[in-house]
Length: 186
Image: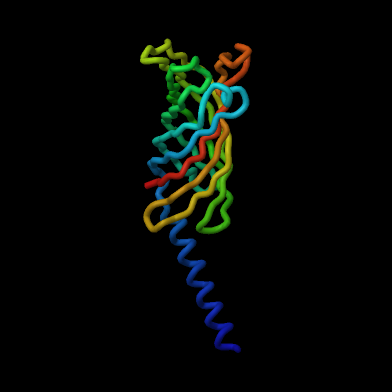
């Protein structure tokens, strides 16, 4: 019984030491890539089908705090679903955001909350004819989880984007999309 207790204490100590060393050696700057499904909600649901997105990320971890600051560039594409019979169209959203994330220091798996703001460029094409695009202000927020895989980190997150487009069904609502992203940070 004592031998098992000693082995458990030794293994726990080694794991704690490894975790502290890995955290202390963590690089403050990371770049990453991700992508996934984008689900329109609220007013956007009546105009867009589910789409996809991709994003590039840059992240800086604030020293000695469970906080990171970052930027992201994103691309989202949707098929339009409220067109006349025989017409086809797509809509795309380009985004450039700044955000802050608070990581809960639980261990190698770190849940986090995030919020950001930035610019969204919204454009569409119907039957091969592009409508003028518009750049609008927007905010986003969400939840995620990040975990280490050797020298890289992987993440999964869900956000809600609120783009102040004033182009809803009644010409006064916002475009809201929920992107679910899976990605890696180097």
